[in-house]
Amino acid sequence: MKEETAIFFKKLAQTIAANVPFVVYRKPNENLVTVVVQNTTKLYHLNTFLEKGFVFSPYSKTAHKIIFPASKSKMFEAELSDFEDLGVGVQGVDAELNMCDNEVKNNHILLTKKAIDFIQHKNAEKIVISRKEVLERNNFEVLNSYKKMLKNYKNAMVYLWFHPKVGCWMGASPERLIHMHKNEFKTMALAGTQSFENTTEVVWKTKEKEEQQFVTDYILDTVKDAIKNIKISKPYTVKAGSLLHLRTDISGELKCEDGLGNLIDSLHPTPAVCGLPKHIATNFILENEMYDRSFYTGYLGELNVKNETNLYVNLRCMEIEKNQISLFVGGGITKDSLAENEWRETVFKAEIMKEIL
Image 1 (cartoon, rainbow, N blue to C red):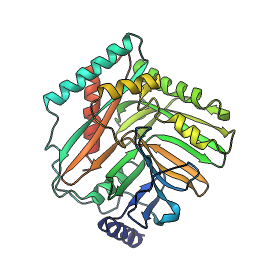
Image 2: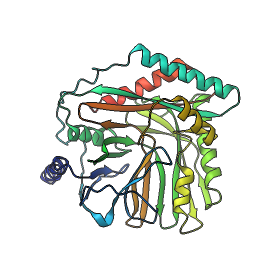
Image 3: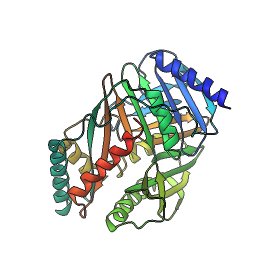
């Protein structure tokens, strides 16, 4: 098995070096690692959700969604039995080279206070605000970091995506946007964050419980006309790397066979990355966040591959450019939020991501 693993990663390294469009990914709680390599460097945009391939969608609903079409791509994969033994090396990246300065901190706290005030005046129930943290890199080895992600985030969608006309992104998302197998539908409401301290038996504060309920209620209201026989689990705690979240599972059956596109469009962006009411939160973000989220809080995954669609919200992600790494972190703001605490949560999330650099 070690020899097969070595052969797989050697082939993946050759793919990365070839500067061709590709994605390597492993779905949550699975051992299968899949590589999709596009045959040309052409940039394909998704035109209809009837297409087949790997989709990479930005946060903005008006921006183009990118697809590696199944008909224009080849694939290779490996079943890895042990993610603890991937030959991870020590890297020469100084992840602390660009620590957040006081200006970044003050700006985020001011934005958080503005969001809290906006919510307390009953203009919204929840707003998700985020920021980008840029680190300089020194001989960064992207494949080595991807191996670390595979090891550290076993219950996440762990991916490395590249297109020479777009750039390179890597992430480990614990949040499913949608799973479809034939007409069987699954999604989740995921919200609330706290650190993992050797147990999932934890107490959640009112703020986190309300935030998670906002997401659950929104999803149920969104899918009620498209999904029948809806089933809802009780909220429970899940581990994602070094973090814990509150999760509710939602499932059912798609009423209309050609309703997938409308369902995806209505679910994205979820309140977990945007807020509620969605149009008000979206406008607040556009007017106040002051940077382009790009593919952060968009979605990615398999579209109509092997009779399944598996899409995940693009969280815990980074953009990798020539000489820098951009980390994206955020958090949900409610009427009970405290600005300093929200700032510390983004710092903690960034530190967790730096562990794989």
